Length: 98
Image (cartoon, rainbow, N blue to C red):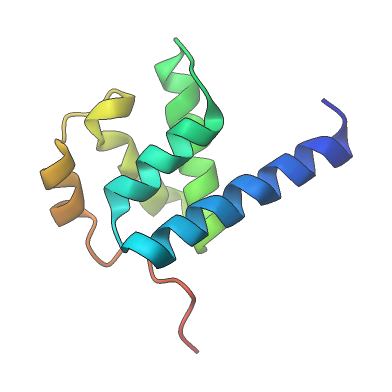
């Protein structure tokens, strides 16, 4: 994929998950939307890596903190949807507050 096309696609995905957050205020909804945007893959580790990077970039979250999203069961983690919502409450603050 060409660099321009890659950047355009990345911006589209970031805007999509930000819009999802603004509409639903749900971590699980954002994670589902992101995984849908990334497309199907048998590589759970690769998907988890992409989730961490996109969440960090989209919501200005440090990578060390964004890495905790890999605990969500749908990408190989041990937390259910309900546990994920509870555990990560307050992790996303968007738009950023001055």
